[in-house]
Image (cartoon, rainbow, N blue to C red):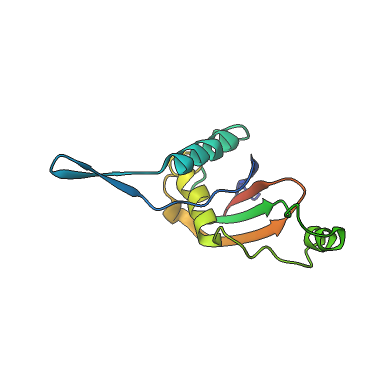
Length: 140
């Protein structure tokens, strides 16, 4: 019997990439902090995961992350159809690696002990009617 677990969940809204840390002076020292937009998105990722599972995955993990972006409003119907069919790829910002980083970092300590457990990673950026990120985590 195969007891490897698989957890799929959806993060609603426009995908957000991991932003660089920010720095501010405090007296003679420097304070490092995560930008608010990144913090809020990582909280949304954690809430979305906990809505479907309270368990942590063990051992090696594969992660499939699909970011769905809405087509621009200023395009023709024909272009829109092509985008939604997948004939036109989404090649704008955000970078795939930043999308993956925001999702994987948010799940640290929630879906697994550390994102170093992710041994296989697939990231896609696609067009869709509704912006969202779909995540599939599997124990290998």
